[in-house]
Image 1 (cartoon, helix red, strand yellow):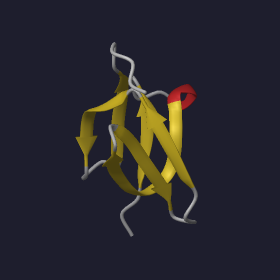
Image 2: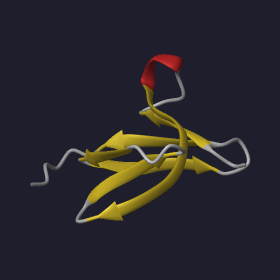
Image 3: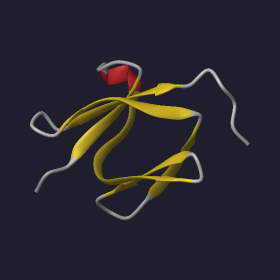
Amino acid sequence: MCLSTLYDGKIDPGKVIMEDAAHVTVKNGKIVVMDILGDEKELNGYEIMDLDFMKHYAVLKKTSEKRS
């Protein structure tokens, strides 16, 4: 099973947004992530900075613009 860890800004154990992320989508300008158990988080004001399917991680970063 291919699950990924999502990080805020850099790969660092203290910057984990979600472990075992199974699905990532963008809805209305927000990144919506879901883990293997179906728990969702909506991340407003983030964009994908780096995504590595082979190493099972994604790094997100906060955008400078604010979205409503």
